[in-house]
Image (cartoon, rainbow, N blue to C red; front, side, top):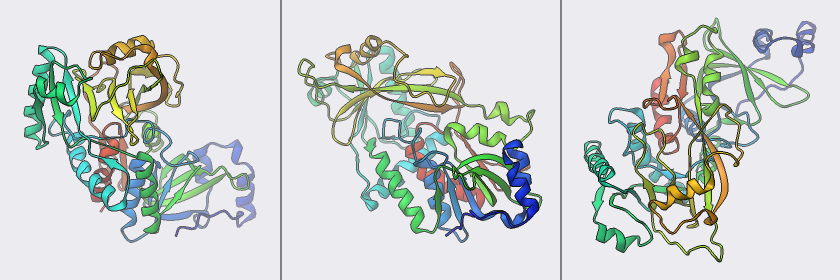
Length: 418
């Protein structure tokens, strides 16, 4: 196990530096640490969401030490737990994109992992529903694309659709039988347990404040610990993986000067989505569905639309809608589209739904490289030797299908580093 140093400074000179910690910048503070006062690790993973936990677990299988640091008080408190909890099939994105390849690989790995470790999941399938001829043509083209990437789908006749899902309205239906749902918290708890059993450490409430390339190789990283006795700690890591999700662009740019291309190349844009619960009140219609139901997405695949999902207990929820926001910490449920507009969007495929049947649930924020109204952007998963930072891996723009792809992403990062 890694021993996180929480001792007093060893020399008078170091003590004086520590006493001035709050009067200097994080970069200056990091430079003040002597080598003997640093914690040494082989692999440092920044971010304790589902991607960071999966990567930490993967790297912990190798010789050497692995430390995962997470700024929040618990793991997976941001994008990883504020989503639809869907195991995606990999049907929407371009054939050669990482989002397609890692989703398909990750889907198979995730089903196997969940079965082996008793993580709750259900392979319940999904319908993508069209409401007019133009959307129906999109479904036919999507079916061709799915055949090309070897993801099983099939068209459902209107007669069969009405029999299978009498509450759903659709002009045409494409069925995706390998889509499922998962207990994301159960998955992350299991990944945490798994990485700990492999000898890795997870440090919660530990926020990265500065990163330097070390002259002797590897990286020096300053973290805030939340400990009043020792508010900061320095880590020297042979390799660093930036899996910081909503904060990944800021972490990456700690390494580079203000005029470096990463500031624009890796800039994230924040897409807030609200989820709504079906109230099941006495005056609400009784609605039963057996699978997930998605509308046809927008042309740039910015959003998959306000869809119907089921949780592990069978309760219906809808979302997310889409609102571009400037803050990556704004989880308020108010604002956004009026609830009557949300209900109207849902009613296109579930006509019985009215605004009174919906209650605000929760919100999530997706870290997008794609500009509002811009073209599709793929995941960035890159070892940065070309930029002068060997052994540093950036994961930027990891949104949907990030949860589904997590185990495959972890394997990819392992291959990039070893």
